[in-house]
Amino acid sequence: MSQNVALVTGGSTGIGRAIAKQLAEDGFAVVITGRNEATLEESASQHEAISYVVADVTGTEDAERTLGEVQNRHGRLDVLVNNAGIAPLLPLEHATPEHVDAVFNVNVKGLIATTRAALPLLRSSKGNVINVSSVLGDRPFPNASVYSASKGAVNTLSRAWARELAPDGIRVNIVSPGPIATPIYDKMDMPEEQANEMAQQITSMVPLARFGESEEVASVVSLLASERASFVTGSQYLVDGGMGA
Image (tube, rainbow, N blue to C red; front, side, top):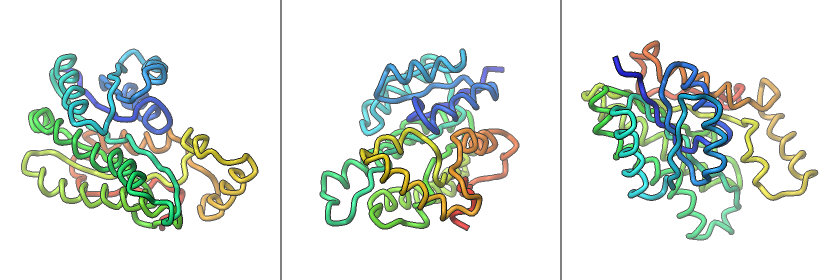
């Protein structure tokens, strides 16, 4: 029997990096994508079963090229993890059309393009799709309206696809992280004091009173990717320390 294959978008850092390693340890051949070859190469070095494709998730041509690479390298696809995303936080008054396009192009359009391109392989394997959303998709924050709306769209797409693709034997589920300690917080371009204050404010909203770790998200993805979750579709798993309860 051929080795099962997983594709993880945005697999170079943070949650995607942890997911790639976990799935490789679970026995999958894993292909990761991202725009930065250096970070992709570093992520792939975690395990011999991980390879990478340099690709921009927002480009339909890149999505089709990526799935072509998966087909050429492995001949199948069993699990698609749509993890690539951006999370710029801006108040409404600064939410220009360019900002809206940037967020939705990655978080929504890229997810749609990749999943569409993957359908033939997923139908063949009766595989499954795991969409990485956010607790903000259900519990929007001030100054994050566009990002929250994009993740709300991910949730809606996922539930619709779970019903639409069930006759093909394809499962579709959602994993919604809360505050996770990832490099995304280092990219917010704010003074250290302000960043620490924001972290304390976020922690105060989490019943478990801490940030989560990427590996804790990866563990839930691992479950959903496996046959242990063979009767689970259209479901949403919060990995948020109780924040969305």
